[in-house]
Image (tube, rainbow, N blue to C red; front, side):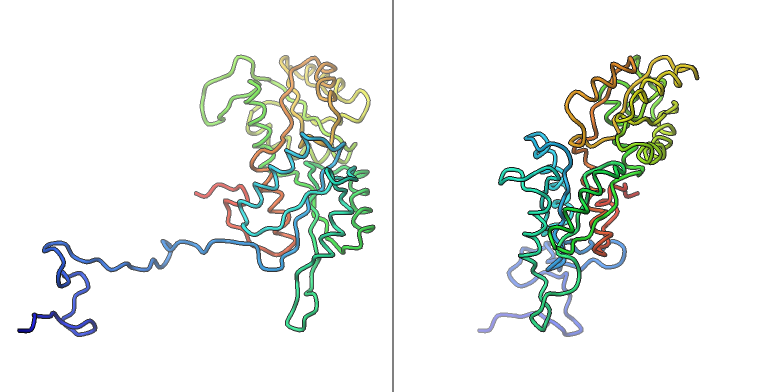
Length: 316
């Protein structure tokens, strides 16, 4: 005695949502549907095979703190672009613990894995160097270029990270963490210790001050208080800027370091804040958007299009 069978798949009477033989009555078997159109999930982004290494050029005297910061920034970049070969080179390094930028670049060139169909290395640099700097510092950038030249790697150098709106956001966060600004500009509450004038401290002379001033205007728009940039490495610049702000009506000042951190010596920020007679926020450090800006600079050099969230831009 043969058991009854339903319509064969592909026949006009076959219904994918109807119960199959042996299935519990009333429980239709649902076939998965592939998402199409704007609801389809984007393909995961990964570093192309053979892409240049991202080499983070870390300024300042190497230390455990600067290494930890650089590793965290590199980790953020890797998390946004899986498969990324991210390395760290110290401008003032020179040993196994803190390898020099020149040595890291030479190693990247030696292990370049960009082989074409003819078995020869493919086009493009072995590495892309991203300076861990918020603003331009000519003397330091010259040293980075010299290290690149000495390495013989043919590496490419990107711009510094600023000026950029995301750095204004990071400055706002650091000020709010120190109790010197409202945490959310969209809310109408105030902070009793909030500053009514901000000194944006940078290094690199007049060129750096002008670049910081662009980000300062964005920060001023966020906080609705005056923001003036000043160079830590110009004698008397911080105190003169503080006096200028007070003459314009600001009474409660704050120092906002337009710096990642490793590029300045210990105690410099504290001395500057004492000079201005005000409190200071922390340096930008490994704030999330710093890592995303590093990756964004690398991607622009390599020709990789990042999703907006990987660039630190909120998706609406």
